Amino acid sequence: MEKRVREIPSDADLYASGPRLPEELTRWPMYVMSRAVQRGWVLLARRLEVEGLSPRLHAVLAVVDARKPISQQAIADLLRIDRTTMIGIADEAEAADLISRTRDRNDRRRYALRLTEAGERALALADRLVAEAHAELLGELDEGERALLHELLLRTVPAADTDYPG
Image (cartoon, rainbow, N blue to C red; front, side, top):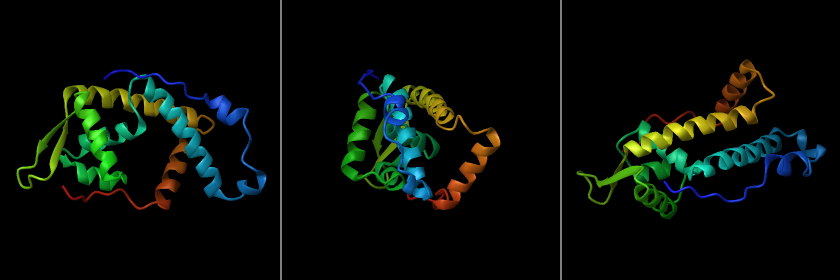
């Protein structure tokens, strides 16, 4: 995949030297979580972009790998990506030889997606970069605190979807 390098503001620029979350909002976990998510996306995007990847493409590759074959529509539904955007992501991934897209035998209107060997390598690299971004984001927490935070956050959103439309 062709590497694209774009200037992304550093974490320090956005979070250390910029304005802090106003104190009157820090009492609300939702505002604090939102700021943590914003910081996390910057850390993640910065790492992935160097390799020509994006957080959204990583998510698509991970879902394709775990649920192969899977339709573009099922991925769009799982990741809450609009159909037009999903088509663009699939087109880009196919052009970069990260996925193969074939017509579904049972429904010719649907495409079934699978990772290619290059897609498997890209996913493995992206997974390492995602782990690095998480380590930096959660660097102030020990392993037990990280596990507890993860557990608590999972309780705030619906459980992982294990049943999905193919």
